[in-house]
Amino acid sequence: MRRWTLVGGGLLAGLVLAEGVCRLVVPNAITGEPNPNRTGWVVEGLVADPLVEFAFQPGYSGRMTVPGDYDVPFRINGQGLRADEDYPEEHPGRARILLVGDSFVFGIGVELQDTLGEQLERAFDADGQPGPPVEVVSVGVPSYGLDHYTKLVERWLPRLHPDLVLVALFPGNDLIDYDLSELDRRTAIEGRLVTERQAWSWNLRKYSVLAHMLLQHFNPVEHAPHARSLSATPDELDAIYRSTLPWTRRLLAAPGEGGPPVAVLIIEGRYMLGLHRKGREDVTPPLGRVLADLRQLGCTVFDPAEAWIAADAPESRFFFARDAHYTLAGNRFMADWLAPRLREAFGARLLAAGGEAPDGGSPSR
Image (tube, rainbow, N blue to C red; front, side):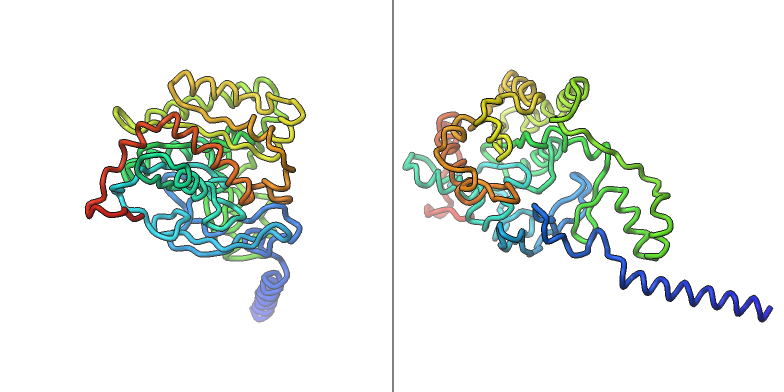
């Protein structure tokens, strides 16, 4: 008995020592220091969300940093949106646009005042057209897709009562990101976005790094690789397109009878711009079919491809060199192009929106 007690004690001490060494030496793949050579910001400040899987934590403040590209602060308001203040439900004296999207709408790499939504407000203010001032409420989270946009519109319509819904669709990944929730569900841990497979490893690691190292190959959650549209087969492209159909119809039906119109803005990325400038038009095959469906269902689609192609400026002016999101100049270019087209398409609705402020003065956000 004494011998077995000594053996057991020795094994326990060895395991405790090994666990301690592992905790000091083995880096945490989720919350460890990011690679300084990375090309994009590692999104932080996220929490799990029962409707859209993950969202920003209300009241969170942090910084976006990519060496050589940007290092700027950001703040999340009490509603989980990137803004300095919360938005009231009513907006007397203002026309309100709900801008829904992913990292391009969130404004990765730029200060709040330089984001697409804020620049769009300035473009409306500067156009000298009659009507109430236009307020843009930006609802954007990196890694969101078409299903998230639909659910966000359904969430915020009754809370913010917009006069127009504008969905910023990024063809680079939005047509495939929407179904990742089914293929490889995601959640937020320690502010970072992870898959369920990573979450299983993380939860095991919390109790024992040593056990995690020994058992990680027995992870019960299978890895779900997803083909990107540029390398997908024709059948896979057709499946991607068909899977979008329920979401596009649900998106357009979200406002209900008499609700605000829903429009779609195509976000031109650096890679797509390069292909356009080389004369390659059909750069994302399912996109054309999706846009055709949207137009057939009565949705207004704004595609600035020709304006981007004609812009006499290098890509480095509009996009960060490593991160590839819009710079201040890129957001301003997009806003200046978009504002007059929104006026042309929805000017009557914007003119009729808002009404007078209760005190007769200027309405406030």
